[in-house]
Image (cartoon, rainbow, N blue to C red; front, side, top):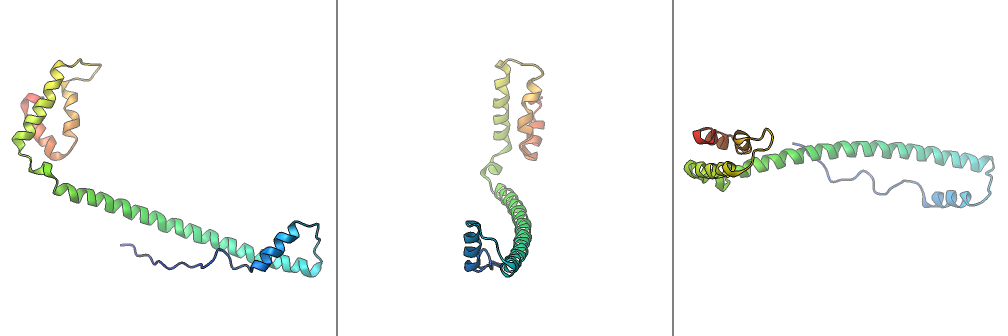
Length: 146
């Protein structure tokens, strides 16, 4: 079973100082040409941002992987829940004789319907036989349906 912690690695969206962000934004709006020292600062900031962008990218990939695992586990558990609940479903208590009556009544509708193309009386029983193995066995045990 998968186990996940609720702890997040990051406490904010970036480790960049707000003053650095403000500096970059203000410089973009002007015709400022940085001197050698300011250019070095900007390049160092860009290098740090590249590392952070790469870190975020890898964190996103890992989060997507974990999400895929969670979705897969969720689907497996949902399917298991459905199968578990079907064990106690009321239809299981229905006597075979009543189920046979229902099937015969269902099939009697086909006596008065038009046959279209290859659809025949034998094809009309197919949906019943595909519900579950119990219904298939019951339908096969009624000679009048075939």
